[in-house]
Length: 196
Image 1 (spheres, rainbow, N blue to C red):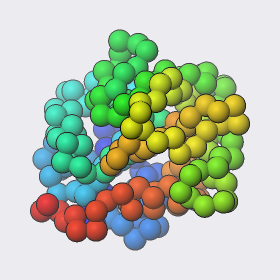
Image 2: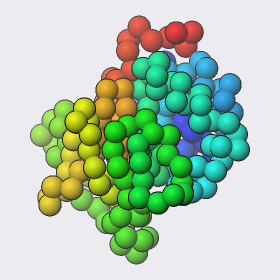
Image 3: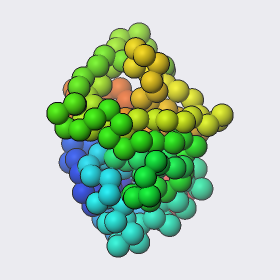
Image 4: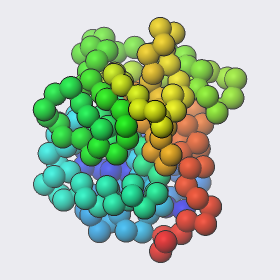
């Protein structure tokens, strides 16, 4: 199994390190043709407007949308969640419109407002998952087919899933807890192969 991590900008190296701990090959993706032989894709955190523009410059949008239509697993973390959203509150960046959610950029505040919170994540068992929120986006709307996997104590959703799509407001790659990455890997069909 090979999982791609979009490496145009942001903390892609941290995701690749977690995949390696799980015994999975993580491949840095910078060009559209590199998407052809991967089983799933992680869109990491970073700066969403820069990420959006680079995705357009390098013609990555259509191939990623095609991956989603083919049922391949795609996970957006922080800025990546903004990119997979159906709509955002601003005109820029332009999201991929893959998941039926609305998102507000930097909804929890700026860098100085970053925080950490233990979360109960559905499907990960009783042990809490330590969420690291850095200039995190807020989910403003959840579609009918979207499953809320984790919320803050006030009920604000911070992890959601829709079929083969996963999105988190926080940065699981910045902790030693591999469970969300393993959950994402489990979304990839076992029969999936690079040539599929």
